[in-house]
Length: 77
Image (tube, rainbow, N blue to C red):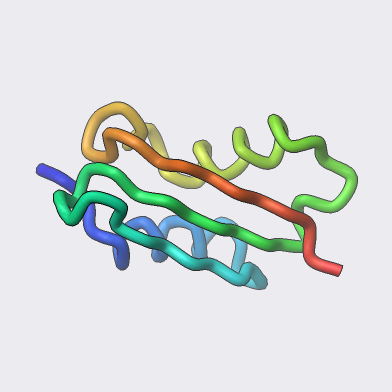
């Protein structure tokens, strides 16, 4: 069963309460999303580490319920 944007945002928000989050359904199929996540938690982390943190927040749903996620992350000033 595909995820919806609200579910993705909720999981990310739980891990990063301060985050500015934008989720877009790229194909309208509930399977391909783009996400922008800006959080102070990313400060001092490289891009790979930031993405790993977001994937961890999704609790194993990547590759299953969530097929594709184009991810942009940045530290919040």
